[in-house]
Length: 223
Ligand code: CA
Image (tube, rainbow, N blue to C red; front, side, top):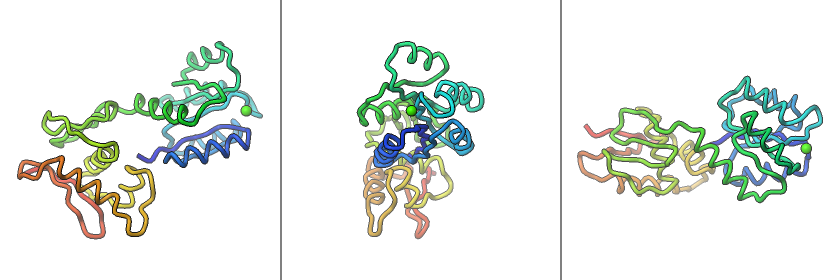
């Protein structure tokens, strides 16, 4: 899934490094170096904010208060150089979803981001499909039977079902489910879709994923 992150960090080296690492992990990063810039950036749709504490025009906790007031559902992870327990308690009391003291490993940060996003997302996507989708557990069931899917297959399936009855372009499937732009001669989406079809079954009672020329793939419920 394409995830838009806001990174509020005034140290330019740290901001560059984190932006690059997070983009490498498939996130889209908007960087703000001050509270004022962060408030402007918050006008765009975002899935999560990472907040440094020491900022040139105030501190991250003030920004956190502001976010809780105006964007109550936006998940927030606080990043701070100060290790005192008080910071952690203050951050969590003010409604941060998690807290990570610097220095941290990138893997730790991306694991925390994914965990927070999982908790924040709705548990189950309600559709009229024969497939039910639980995004928190990342589990899909075809008529009560749990499907054994890879992460990419799960994301592709979710996108296709969410967009029914419209097809989803290969560009969107690649970017949003595989986390990378579709390249020339890129067959990755087609390969995942073909595996997904096998797992869904091929009889008349199975849902179908149909290729639509020049438009991508479309989800079809069994008749
Ligand atoms: Ca700082």
